[in-house]
Every structure is written in structure tokens, then in C-alpha cells.
Amino acid sequence: MSRVGRLRLVRATAVAVAGLSLLNAAAPVSSVARRDTPLEAALRSHVVTLSSEEFGGREPGTDGETKTLRYLARQWFDIGLESGTNNPGSAWFAPVELVERVPAASRVAFRRGKQRLAVSQDGAFVVTSGLRSLVENAPVLFVGHGTGPVPPRAELAGRIALMLDSLPPGTPSAATEDRPGRLLDAGASAVIVVLDGDRRIDEVTARRRRAGYALAGGQLGGDIEAFVTPAFAGQMLAGGAARDVVALRHEAAAAGFVPRLLGVEGSLEATSTETRVRTHNLIGKIEGRNPAAGAVLVMAHWDHFGQCGTPPRLCPGAVDNASGVAVITEVARSLVRGQARGAKPMDRDVYFLATTGEELGLLGAMAFAENPPLPLDKVVAAFNVDSTGLVPAGRPVAIVGRGMTSLDAGIGRVVARMKRRLANDDAANAFVRRQDSWALMQHDVPAVMVSSSYGDPERLDRFMKERYHTPADKADLIEVGGMADDVTLHTELVREFADAKRVPAPGSGGGTTKAATP
Image (cartoon, rainbow, N blue to C red):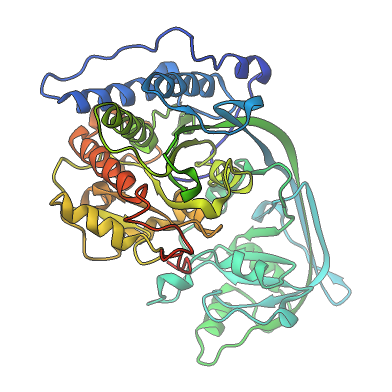
């Protein structure tokens, strides 16, 4: 699952890419428990290998990427997949160029009328998504907690929105999501967040000094956000009607609160350094009898952080997401083996995609969507696998993205046919924006995650609190029984949606993606 992490560059990318030969030496073989079935043993071996110290935490742009893609490509080639890039000049590996930006310097200044206000730079931190962004002498508009209706663009344009970080009691979760982003999208020149809640300036500064990423060639933006202490806000408010943060909180809590100008003008400046990173998606394919009928996509992200924690240590990423690429690898094996043993050939092509840059903001999936190897409207169904291996075999199945695509009915048929139980709520949709299928949904591709790991909220919550994105996400804690269930489930899902009679192509009686609203 996605969270922005820190990237390191390899010194010679061309050499690393050349090292992605399918014929390199075999990956290390790990021992498995005797109680494992053959499928469970294969899954365990993949996860142990990919999360081992040798793979270095699978950080894009490092030797860990080279080893990861070499391992997966060799597995897929040996299974019998063919390259799915549909580009002879770049077989198997689809290049993805990223831009890494790291905050470098920031400056703040305020004035009331012609009087320059004395403010301490130590109490403020300014960050931009661009290389250099500057807002000069813009009026400051107090917007309360930023949880109410966003002011109209005419009210925000050319102004700096000042927002309290704290939340009033009973605030609905929908109103808390990316409050500064909502204001910037609505036209604010910049946003200042007063850290009057639980967050401290040193914590925010440490987190926001990490690199930010975007696809090269995309819109990299230039938004400015500033974070200030309550003491700093008091210096800025000096001489005004509201002289400190306490007064601002009383004002924001009053019935009928409306945003108002504070009589202060602000100047904010932030700069960043930029580095370009070349990484790769891996794409394989099983060719169907009638590719014109469309395609099914099965995907999982291969990347992780390299190191994490304090002090930094290996971040294995066993669950997130060695487990996912292990599952889709064994789905591919099951489908190819089934056809070799006489199973009905599938009508549609089946693509297998291992994405890069998921942890950096779903960037590999975005790159795939922006430069796909086939028209995206030919993708009848896309199934993402992320962070499985949390539950034993036999648990209920949940859909991340339930009710948001046309896929639910077909998934329900498969689950019922397998005599599995489908979770009857939408709780798993809390994760819909945090995984790669979300990037495809923004391009009208019907994409979901289907897994028993998301059907057990208690175990999922425990993983998120104790092991997620930490050195504790190790292979010895995975549940291969639940992973094996996900393999058999996805094998049947692919067969269902690759059957042109059971699932007609869009425009020929089949459904289309619904509005992607979680």
C-alpha cells in the first residue's frame, strides 16, 4: 500500500537494466514447512526470497529492483508467459521515469498594513511540490478547521488560507481528508496549517522533508503549504482582532462561522532539489483465443522502501507486497498449467502487471494507464493483489471497490460457485484509494481488489498498527493458507471474466465502470 518513501539512485541504470536477463543465476531457495501444500510452499518460497536481505527491501532505482525484476521475469518466463509490453524494443520491462523532489529551503514573512511583523523562522516550515514557488504579499483568509464547505474560488483566489489543524468534536471522516488539498484545488494561493492539535512542528518537518515523487513529463505542480506553531501564529496575529490561537478556535466554533480576512498579508517561498529516477513495470501475457474480445488484467506492486524505521533497517515488505506478486505469479502458473492439462482455452488475453512506485503514490500504475500496451477500454476487468497473507484459509472474501464498478455480480458468481462466503459490507472500501486499482479506476477501468485478508478487519487493523511499513513485516509471519485461497479465487475470477460468453465486452451487453466514489 502506498506511502511516500525515500528513493536512492543506482550509479549506472543502463547496467542495471541490462542485468535483467531471464537467464541469470537462479534465486536462492528457501526451506519451507513440511505442512505446506505444494502451492503454499511455492508461495512461501516467493515471499521469503523477495523479502530477504539480498533483495534489499525492493527499492526502485537500486540493485534491489534489478534482482526483483530478474527473479519475477524468470518465474514468468519459465511458467510460459510471453512479454506483455507489446513493444519488441522493450520486451517484458516497461520503463517508468520518475521525478524525485526533496525540500531544500523555506522562508516566511508577514505584514499588517505597512508594518512588518516579527516572526521566528524556527516556528514555520514551508514546502512546495515544485522546484521553486513564491507567493508575495497575499491576504490571509481564516477558514477555521477547513472541515466545512470550501469557500468559492472567487474568495480564495490570490489569498493564503489559514487553517487550524485540530478537529471539532464529531467531525465526519469525509470532511477530514486532505483539507489543505481541498483548499488548494479550490484556488487558494497557499495554505498555512496552524498545528494546534496533536501534531508538532518537528514531526511534520521530519515527515515532509522526505522526497516527493511524480511521473516525469507530468504536471509536477507548485502548490505551497506552510506549517506553523501556535506561538508563531500568535506572532502573526499580533495587533489583530484575534490575538492568539485560542481566539481563533473560539471563532471557528461559533455558530454560523464564515471565513474572514485577518488583515495580514503573507509572503511564502519554498524550494526543492530534483533528481530523475528510471525504474520499470514488468508486464507478461497469456494470449487468448480472441484478443479482439478484450483482456483481463491481474496486477500487484513489486516495490517497497528499501530501509525504514529509526534507526533505518531493512524494510522487508513481506506482506506489502511480496505476498501480492507471489499470488499473481502462482495465478499465472495455475492458468497456464490448466490449459496444458486440457482446460478450455480462454477467450481473452490475460495480462500480468508488476508495478513499480506504488509506495511513492501509485506511480507505476499511473504510468501503465498513461501508456498502456493495449487500449484501456479493452480491459474488461482488472484485479489488484496487495497485502495478502494476513489470514488463514477459509475466511470470508472482501471486495475493495465494492459497489464502484460493474464487476460485483461476476465476482459474486465466482465466490458462490467456490462455496466461499462474501463479506456483506463495504468496510474494505476504506482502502480503495491506497492501492493500484484506484489509479486505473481514474481512467474508467473496472478495477478492484478481492481478498480474504480484507474480510477480517481485526487482523488487518493489527497488521496496520504493528507491522505495516516497518522492519517487522517479515516472511515468517505470513499466512500462506489465505494466500493459497487468493490464488485459487483469482484463477477462477480470471477464467470467469476471460470468458466472452459469461462476461460480454463493454458495449455488447456488459457493464461499464460506475463513478468511482468511495
